[in-house]
Image 1 (tube, one colour):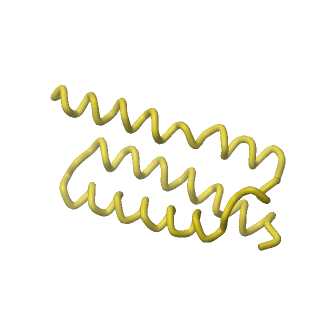
Image 2 (cartoon, helix red, strand yellow):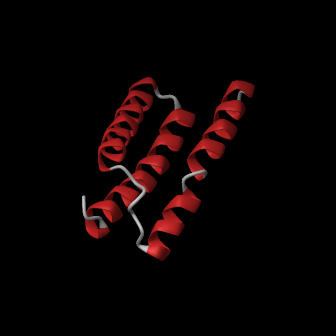
Image 3 (spheres, one colour):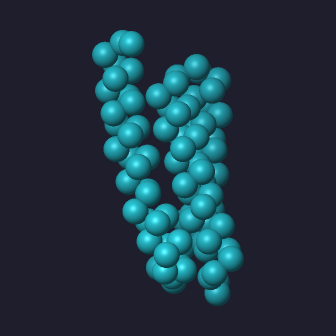
Length: 86
């Protein structure tokens, strides 16, 4: 593995798994009042686009990070749609 890939994977790990506490907290409390539907919708679409971009380039740190982040963002977005009022 190249050193730049290591940096990419480490950065991906930090930014991707920073979503885990939010997903867990939202799942436990069902409180989505502080989550913006517009922001998470556009964020999730952006992550999907980054995933597609990473796949086209064959940039595996980008692919792995964005695939996991997409799942986490979709979980939060899904909870917002299910438990939210707006």
